[in-house]
Length: 309
Image (tube, helix red, strand yellow):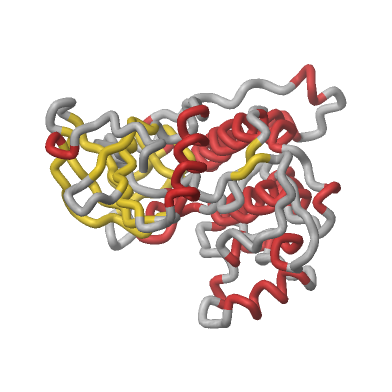
C-alpha cells in the first residue's frame, strides 16, 4: 500500500450499518465525525492493483452526475477504506422495485435518464467506460431529484484491449459474453438501454428468467432476446423512448447511438417529438423536476398530497 495516499484518519470515522456488496468490497454507511456528515465507506477485499486502478479513475472523474469520492483511510485490520458521499435516497434499483408509496411522472423518468446519460457521456469523454452500468450502481440524492453513477471498480480505458467478461448478466451487452472478441464503450450504451427500459417499465430486466442460470440468460441475449418493449407503460408522446431503447440494445455495437447523442435527445421536451418537421430548432429543454411530479400513495391506492422530505 506504499503507493496509496491515506488522506483521512480512520479514527474520525464511525462505521454504521452494512448497505450492500460493491465491486472489490463491502459497503457501509458511516459518519465522518470531523466533517459532521454522513458518508459511505467501501472496505476493500481485493488486490492492490485493482484498487489502484479504481482510485486513479475516481481522482479524475469530477461531474455532477458521478458520485463524489472524498478519499481513503486504513482501518484497524489494515484494509483500505474508500470514502464517498452518502446517497440519502438510496439506489435507483431500490426505488423502482422496493418502493410502493411514491408514483413518479414520465418527466421525472426522462430527467433521471438524462442525468445518467450526461454522467456516462462525461465518462466516455474521459476515454473510459464503466462496464457495469445498472440500477444498483445509480444513486438518488436531494429528495429524488439528482442522479449519480457509482461503483467504478470495473472502469477501464477505451484505448486498452477489452475481452474480459465483466458486468451483471441481465444488463450485459452480447459482445462481452461471446468471448474472444473485443468490445468498446458501446457496451455501456446497451446497459443504458436496459436501465431505460427498467425505469420506464418499473420491472426488473428479464424478471421472468430470474431463476434461470446466468449463462442461459446470456445465451438468450446473444441470440437476440430482449426485455418486452411493450412492458413500458403508456405515456403521451413516449413512442420515441421505445425507439431509443431498441437502438441502444441492437446486436451490432456500431449501430448503437453514442451517449452524447442519447443525452442530446433526452434533453428535448417529449412533446417536441410529435410531428415536428424541424425537430432540432423546435425542441424545448426538458424542465427541472418539481414536487408536483411526485405523488404519495396509500396502500389502498388513494392519492395523498404531500411534499417529499
